[in-house]
Length: 205
Image 1 (cartoon, one colour):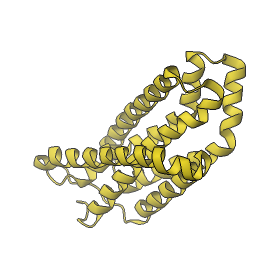
Image 2 (image 1 turned 45 degrees about the vertical axis):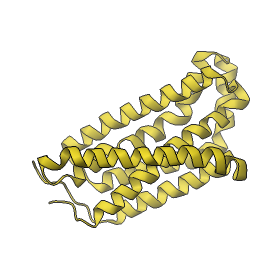
Image 3 (image 1 turned 45 degrees about the horizontal axis):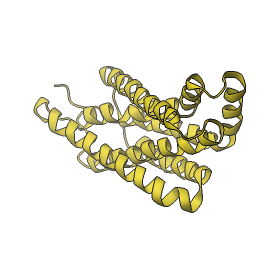
Image 4 (image 1 turned 90 degrees about the vertical axis):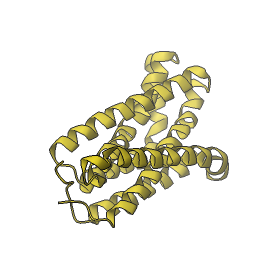
């Protein structure tokens, strides 16, 4: 069964929002790590590396789901789990960061461990979105390249918007922990929208 045309705007909208949250949370990661590990180049290298690894894990996992049973409910479930993870971060982050500092120190291994604990799971889950979305929106082999370009392009626009909005508007106005809750609620709303939509599968090509 092909996805309904009405599903496409929803998927593109969520691609933009999820892309914004993904990069916004990377920026927040620096705020969570700063009191314990500083804000130097080592911390940023750890954050960026973790984000890239998380995206790779998400893309590989998403492609595996595509090979089995892709549906908007699959990405809805992944986004909902990511939302739940983010909702736990403000209460748990300080204890996790302090434990890493106490047991590993403040060197590269510590900043990588802290970045991994904070970012790897939710961003890997968000990374599954794009491969599955491309599969859902593709109705023929000839459309694959165009759809992939649109999905990743919209998501990248969301990355830019999330980076700038988080850095220049949200952090100065409401603080890192409140932003994390906003991100969690936003992702939960996106997930609910996908989970409430009747499941559809892409056409075989």
